[in-house]
Image 1 (cartoon, one colour):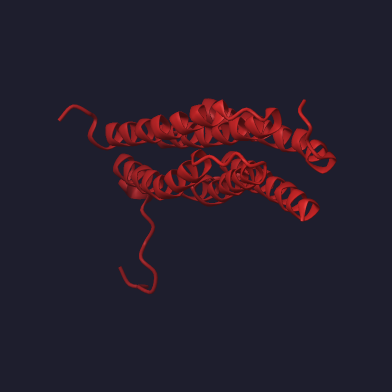
Image 2 (cartoon, helix red, strand yellow):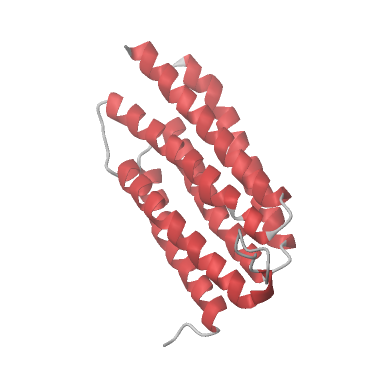
Length: 95
Length: 108
């Protein structure tokens, strides 16, 4: 790794582990969720958490190209959630 | 100054990860869709915002600031309520009987 100060080097693995555990919980709800809105909500939370995971990884590796990916995931994930929500409400996304 | 900033960044990271984990735990644990919506829409958004602010602070301190973290934070805080509102509308459309009664009206 790069020349991170010791306090950050000590904290970062735990932060990554917390986000990984959050991803596992979201995936569990995505697979199990009784209804369609539950699954869409789980997908929404999944992309937000993976975005944060990428940001933490970019901080750890001191590589800013991860933030471009995180920005893209944020934009496309929101569009996906909106489209899925519209699909549930109307049953059709092509007007 | 450097030590203070390092501690601040580490604290923001830990607090953010904790909030995100609590939000996801709430999504997995709570019993009803409308209860489950609280976790991701509030706790996870705050946690991810904390992590993004920590990253932005750290890279600005390193002398290579980037607008990406700020943009992601702004976008996330703008879109989280919109998607939560859409999902509630979708759930109400799928199951209109799940709409709770208005408070303060005992009759009817």
